[in-house]
Length: 471
Picture 1 (cartoon, rainbow, N blue to C red):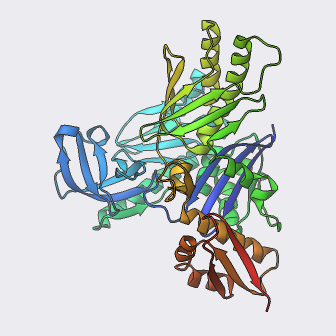
Picture 2: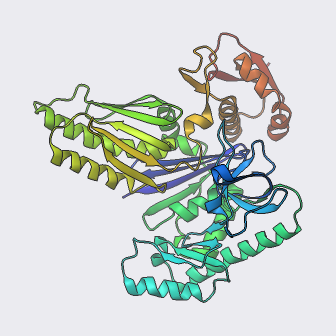
Picture 3: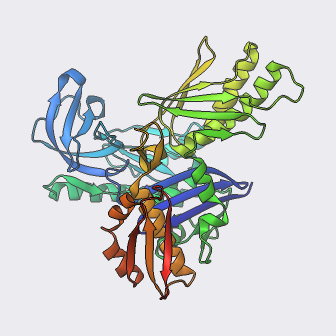
């Protein structure tokens, strides 16, 4: 397997692509100005305790109040009171209608272990089958865990030495101590600690023995990650590489083209079949069609062949699009019960590649597969598309923020390729022009040139031009 990790970093956003045998298998986009990212730790003040829904609402300094379930309170014998200050961690990001979901059971996730506050439990990954090895990890973890902390030993721990395992665990304990000390001093609500940006998640969740290269296009990010890998994960030191070519990193691997496909409603399969995604407020519906595929096969054989191909692609698209919540899949109807079971088994196998918890509930009498995928972060559709003002929300268009980020990346590319001696004019749609004006002063300082905005009412929202002012 040829596996590459591609980390592209700009001042606006960071993007991580996981490419296996020239196929984009995972994509994470982190907006550097995002609020309330899952995993962040906040100081919150209790605003309401609502017994009827077994929860507490807290002001954590953001827009909407955060929601804390009773199950996520460390000492459930004593409920918080109004005005009390709590230390909480984001479990699920806010939506248009709801504030973020938070927990008092704060965790610090490393590559080899997860440190958890408010429990004495030490768990070991189910993928570690050797019982002697499982017991060994439990025992060495017990020796350094503080009172009131538990841990989960991750699968990656079997690839490293005991020394490296303990070194990282001690680092997580130190991070927890820092947070507790800051919390005791802090009197205001708001973000207290961000324990994992995208570069750290890249190392923690994706860097493994199968990775051929980790390519990073930002020098400061490369230096920071290289130092971290050398100190804590030396077995991967030869993997990390600074990418400094003129052609953008994502263009070399055709990632930008793949990203554009993620916003399409219809995905074409190699067999000639297709998958169609429809999004509602409460669930996502996926329809599988056989299309032009037949190859002189019976209907049952065609259905099974296309359904298997679709199952593989659906699992991949769920990861790439960040789809969560309730998902209904309408596979091509098959009468053969054995093949139905085989299809479910195949889908489960493909979903095991997902870091996010997924549960297949079964197949209904109508042949619909019901499943859920844990929703901790926003989907790409939510993040980067607005309801269209023309069609009233039936279709989707890029958000102004996403278009701004794309233009900023183009400006960075122009500077890299030497097109930096002239002032610039950005010609774009009126709404985009109005949005860009608040960034122009910053961009002019960053790129050292005058940047003019030219409105063009005839352009679509996501169409723009960057012109060199040579006169």
